[in-house]
Image (tube, rainbow, N blue to C red; front, side, top):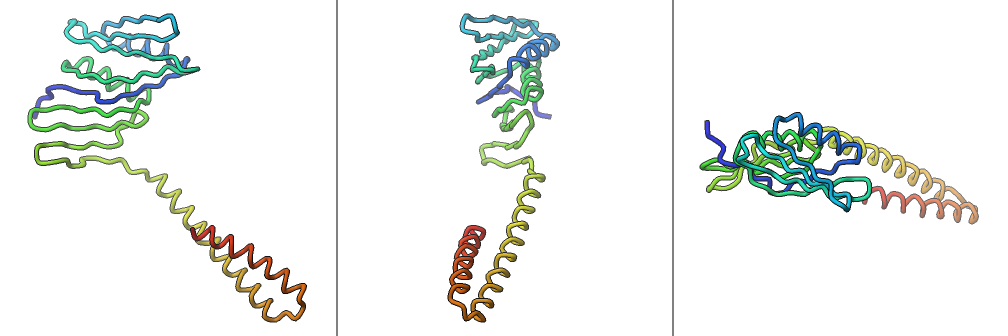
Length: 196
């Protein structure tokens, strides 16, 4: 099995509410790493994570934005302890990230969305290959349901137009024909909108 050389957080973003921030700090304290927390004058917080041996550290700066703390970071990690802590933190606190897991002959690119892996791409000298892509089954079903609903509504409008055309052809009263024409104008507009 290939050994990972490094893990690179190309782009990671954590957005925590004021209630989640203390939970995040507690979570990090439970990970058996050295943690230093600084609260800055403007309400921002700076967290420095360091592996126990002191070989590697990550600095997370959370900027206070109204009722949220937002951290955007890029870093490169070599030692497994901090790598695992960061992976768990992104997953547990629903972060978004693009993470390169670098091996000697290839790189696995993980795309995280709201804490879950949404896509994995293997990159080699020969090119890129999608290894995994999460399907939005629920979203696809909802879209299909909406499409069927629109198709049914189109059929109802078409039937109503046909009935009105029959009535118009049978009518001799000019006032009634005017009312039918107005209703036909409304229904043809609705049909145009539905078919678009």
